[in-house]
Length: 260
Image (cartoon, rainbow, N blue to C red):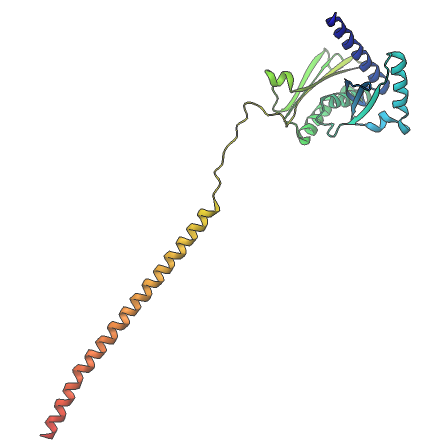
């Protein structure tokens, strides 16, 4: 019985999600989160264009709440519009922008549009992105799939299953149906194979000590030079005194010879 209740609840949530997407427009909405609170069911709509969803003075939200009450028997539905800060990194908004471009300009410029989406995502801070475009609507003789990728993206493992942001969209054109698949790996996710290089930082204390040693060595050299100069000066003075003492007795002898 519990399993049946869970399945019925999930089916009801899916029906509400498809109805909200159809009412507000798939291009304007990114994704929807539903939560049960004591006051009622809280439905948060994530979008990059909140003004289009809210309408003038919240007219669209008021109409949508009334429809949800009557059609899905919801007691107190609370609609909340959440703005996406960086739509270039959100997979659903990227896929829907590509889909709207195909509907407006046709599929002839699909390569330029895909490469622009890759460039915008990498500039916005994504670690890796992959865009797959395929179907009968792609301009070719047969149905083909084109894969565009940039950066680093995990294809298998726990990170690929749980942390990679994925979105699938399609659009019906005159030439045929085109499917778009977008996968984005965000920069905040820490990978297990990330390698960090440790760099040894030079301590400022060691540099100061080296400077002090250099100063001390210079002072020692200067003092040694001063002592050598003093020794040379004293030795010169002694030699001068000795020479004077030797000259004096000669003069005395000359004077005594003259007297005689």
